[in-house]
Length: 316
Length: 316
Image 1 (cartoon, rainbow over the protein chains, first blue to last red):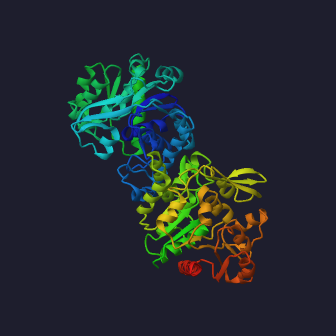
Image 2: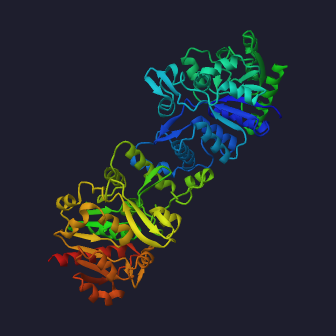
Image 3: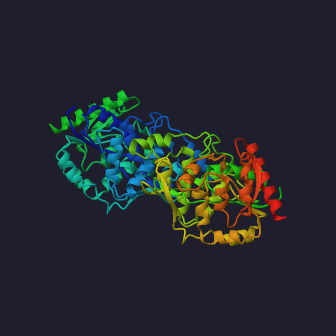
């Protein structure tokens, strides 16, 4: 397809659609704007889980079964360093570690995260554009019944077991989009903006928390379409459903539509949830029903194509 | 053996004798004082090649065939990072990398190199004592016909091909022995000091360049014995012979004796070089001839035992 698309994306779930978009669009025509709220330091190295997942997925080296990490990964580094210290709560494979070490070195040499991401992407032969939401640190903090936790503490170390009361994005008021989000839209002129089926509260909200993003979306002249991460009251990946419940959001597509309501033009939901169409359309948001499960690459491409066509129909 | 020994040591060649000493002496009775002049930063991580070689060797995890690195090492990290950058001149295996990353992290947390070395050694189950010659940076610089080179540049990247004119130890005038070398002798009361068959010019000279080391050796009350790294005019490991030639030192045991002359009591040389005995003894240095080749662990233990007994005979 000759279209150009800007996608907002978190990690595993969203990256699947991004892979489909990447294979559907001509090289260079996809701009993926990625959450960095989950970024953290491990062993003194800067780790950007969502950027890495999107990058590995677009590069075709991602572990398809796990959804994160690199296919054929090995763990000799972790086995050895576990002798020295209890660092095993976050595992970094031998190959994945190369990304973190390269990023650390490039950052010390003064490169910005967007430059480092571009350089890594090129090394992986990726022709599309992966853009971190900010070069400035934004840190997702999860306020729970066990205190306020750094995202990785909540997500990996405590395996999402504390009850979530609120989610904050420390630094979001000062952090700026690389080059500005408005310029990103003006310069690259995407035909549509697609919000990937990532966790709205944990993965897309940090992007929306940045100064000029929400207002730019509200005044965007191109259609904005989201793909819902919910099917039949369940989230297919991760703790999305659980956190929605804990945050008093009914686990359905209406909640997703309401969450993006102030800028969303259309929502793609699964065929099984067709009965929600009426209620979503009452919010002024158009609905497209299709299969949203993405097991195979074929599924991902099919959903990407359907979503692009749906967006296209909304701009007419 | 109930003896206590202080050994001065560089990397691969010396570590073999150190392994023999380690297996000969009771746990805790060996103090290995190790060259850090070859230390450098790679990928932003501090690397201590000689400390690591001695540590891996004493831990029994060293690659016996290569003499450096860890047995059963894998290279997935290097394969991946080579995609990003030309960093392949110095290879770090997946397991070895754990040591460098742990050291980097511990250093950032404020631990000194001797403390980090102790902690790593403990993790490897080493009961003997590995002591870096200094916590302060000393950098071996090789003055060659192709300019002044950092040691790893000369040794690894250029494979020892430039012609050596001089060797300098930057920082040696300010660097201090952890706790002081005199205290090390007074507190641990070794029965002898053994200089391992490391390269005298590159591996032992940096140790001798430190302020109080040479004078402490000169006034030491215990015998000081060296094991020669030369057999029949050849060095068995590395560029020792070549560098001796380039520095106008005849490649024989007499040169080794002369190099350590101001504090050496005895020199262990190979049976094949017995004819050099007279000339060495003229320098006031006693000679012990034995087999100094160390292929097997048995060889290493035998040479360690012979050397300790020889030192013992000199103190009588």
